[in-house]
Image (tube, rainbow, N blue to C red):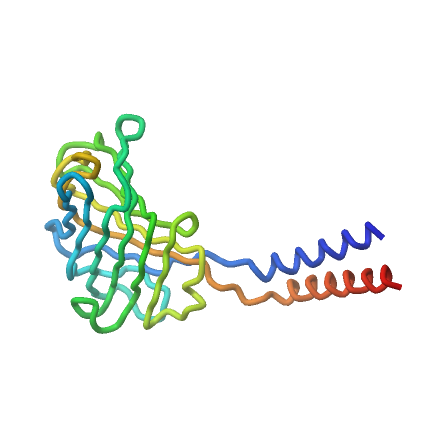
Length: 228
């Protein structure tokens, strides 16, 4: 009886696993067009830091839709620190952030919404020993889990924007070496590129449904036998 029950539970587990499988997909890849710095990172009295990029002209080089690439778009990004900056191993600086972004066909978030979203528990991380001013780079990255990421799009169906999701912005050509002012990351300007990805909401595979059905039928038969 125990062996039969174990087999039935195993079949159910295999079925659920097959149904839950999801394939990671890169949704968008982009980089700014301008050669000048377009991202402004501002330390507010040594207490918090904001990240702002307004109507940054970008070229989208990869997109999870039938829209031909490359194509032009506008990036709007805002983020604010949600905790103190910390120095790790004497060289790396980390600070949590939360914010929103839009990548659209028109400025100010107008036109076609190629991809927009929100994020929390994002980390701005980088080394303050990466090189001379202008050679530094750092990244603003969030993933779910452990953080919170959500996406919307006019072009990409919701089935391709499932969880877990991630979004990342790479800041290069920093105007100042990465540092801590008070309890927050110091001000600098930077250029930007980035990408976002998600796991598709999986369609139940036929073999997954078969295993699940066998397992449930087996458990039901065992239950009837025990009751009898």
